[in-house]
Amino acid sequence: MKQIKVVQIGCGKMSKYIMKYIYDLGGSILGAVDISKELIGKDIGTVIECENKGIVINDISKLEEILNETKPDIAVITTMSFLNDVEENIRTCVRCGVNVITTSEECFYAENSNPTLFKELDILAKTNNVTVTGCGYQDVFWGNMITVLAGSTHNIKKIVGSSSYNVEDYGIALAEAHGAGLTLEEFEKNIASLDNISAEERDVIIKERKFAPSYMWNAAGWIADKMGLTPTRISQKCVPTTSDEDIHSETLNMDIKVGNATGMSAIATLETKEGIVIEAECIGKVYGPNDYDKNEWTIIGEPETTVTINKPDTVRLTCADIVNRIPDVINAKPGFIPTSKMNEATYKLKY
Image (cartoon, rainbow, N blue to C red; front, side):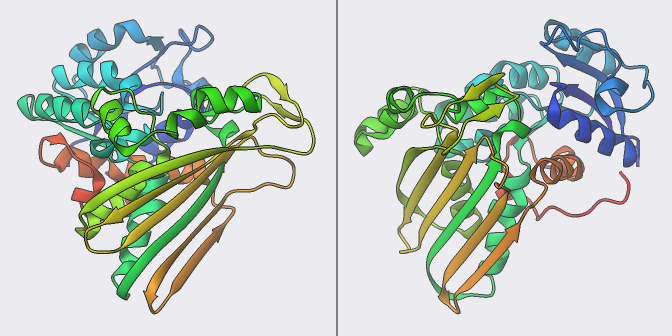
């Protein structure tokens, strides 16, 4: 098999492991871009914390030029959480004939939260004979792990999930998307109030590309798709998390005062024609000294099964999934294809 060639878009916290893992599996990184003046001009080895690799991080404005010069097999986008925010980078890659894999959480199953743009990019990817995919931690721990367990269950009534993670580990865009640092009044105005609307009003916002889904909104849609279920209604509710003591956020460069939002809990509830309800909660916040990541899912059926994973290394699990999925994306059919349409992620010894 020929060596897989990659361009890295976004050289922050996630890329440190992604680029290392790509090299470990025998891949080659041909270029890297970012918007940070602190990173531009540095060798990617400084991000990976290894010897220089001879690849200098360029300004994002040079992305198209780098793609046309290097002609990579795939671009890895590790920047923002929402599809609207990574749209232009995806379009640039696709127009250059380059496959895309991204940690953008909405891209995990964007069809149910931003269908207008999803369809546009799906058509564009098919026209240019490339594949766009979003995945990461949720691919296994909010997705395939659940649907595999469902395969050993009879007469499922409900699937209930909860996952927590430290927003400090993922950069400022994710922290701000979770309302970290806001007063409770600001949280209500900027985040919670957006869900105090009717289903009809939400449909309009979704069609107009103005909806901000919680990560479990997309995960619930992914699970339903993988299981062949027919969604009839989906809703979400976001509530702030708080702490009884001040917490410092390095990512936000601020002290979050007692009573202010450290992040949020978002619960997505998806109902289906088949009667199975998926209720999934994600808790993203700035952690205190006693907090840790936790992932727990219960399938209510015959029999009832609960799986709990304490202290998963969510960042590196995300990065490993991205890197292991790269060959799957390269070999997938053209289009904006969620991993629910692919086989389960598998361990890779070498590319």
